[in-house]
Amino acid sequence: MAKKFQFRLESLLRIRTHKVEEAKEALNEIIQARLKKKREIQEREEQIQAAHAHRGGKSSRPVGELQAVWHHVESLRDQIKMLEQEYSQLGEIETLRREILSEAMKKEKVLEKLKEKKQVQHGADIAREEQLFLDDIAQRKVSQL
Image (cartoon, rainbow, N blue to C red; front, side):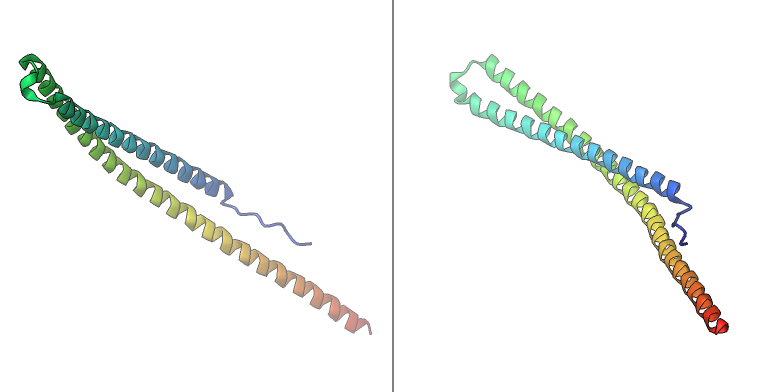
């Protein structure tokens, strides 16, 4: 009877598959964080545009109000600079996590290829055993005649 195929490194393959999933999740978290930073930057830029539009005619507004708007715009610009630095840092982290994911996927792929080769080899071994068994039966029949 044919033996069932059993891959000796199946547990290692499961571990590597799990590491790939963890790396994907970590990468997705960073991507989401970068998108959030990008939205925050866009919101601040929209606030600056709204402040400039709200300012309207300079001569009709009191000086104190114009100064407040100017300080608010400067504060928003400072926030944008800080957010852009954070966005850049998240980009570097994203690059690192992509590399980690790539490496984990390579290691998983190596084991998957090895498993496929072992399965093919197992199939060939089973076919060879069956052929030997059938040849043995045929020889016995011939020798009995």
